[in-house]
Structure formats: structure tokens, C-alpha cells
Image 1 (cartoon, rainbow, N blue to C red):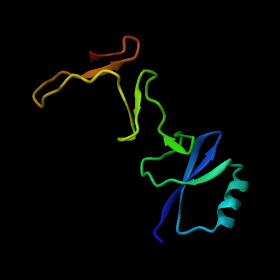
Image 2 (image 1 turned 180 degrees about the horizontal axis):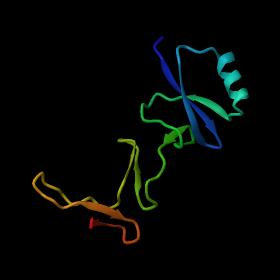
Image 3 (image 1 turned 135 degrees about the vertical axis):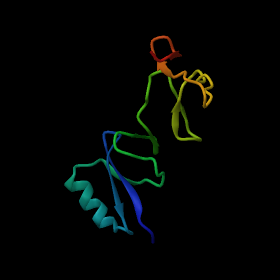
Length: 107
């Protein structure tokens, strides 16, 4: 079996990621007890990282802004308003303004 990522979970938060090559249940239980974890979960998604949440058997990255919406298909947070299009020759640079829930030109 190839190496696999395992997420160490405490209080519904990923606190660490470990890579194991076909670990035994006893080894996983030893790590769980030693680090006082709630659980150790196979993390097949390559983007799982510490500070992500683990709720209802699903991983979710940390929310960027309160207004942003999680896209489960792309595994990312997306703004509720599409960012204005930028062209390669454009010098316009937009940043998200959570207070107005909109994109604003960067100073």
C-alpha cells in the first residue's frame, strides 16, 4: 500500500497531519492516546491541513471571511460576489471588503 495521510483530530479541528505506510490499528490507537486526540482519520484529500475543521465526517478548510460560502466540489471558500475580471495589462487590483461584502480597488 502507498503512503497515506492521516489527520489528527481534537475538538473537531485538524491539529496535525501524519503520513503512514499502512499503519496498524494498534499504532493509530497509540498515537491517539499519546497525543490525547479524539480521533485519527484517513485524509485522502490532499488539501487537508492543520486548522481545518472535521465535522460530520467531512473536512473543511478554515473559513476565510464570514460571508464566504464553502464550495464542496472545489474544496474552497468562495466570495458571495464574483471578483471583477482582471486583464493581464490591467493594473487594477481588487481586495475583499468584508464590511461591505464587495470587492474594492486596492489603494
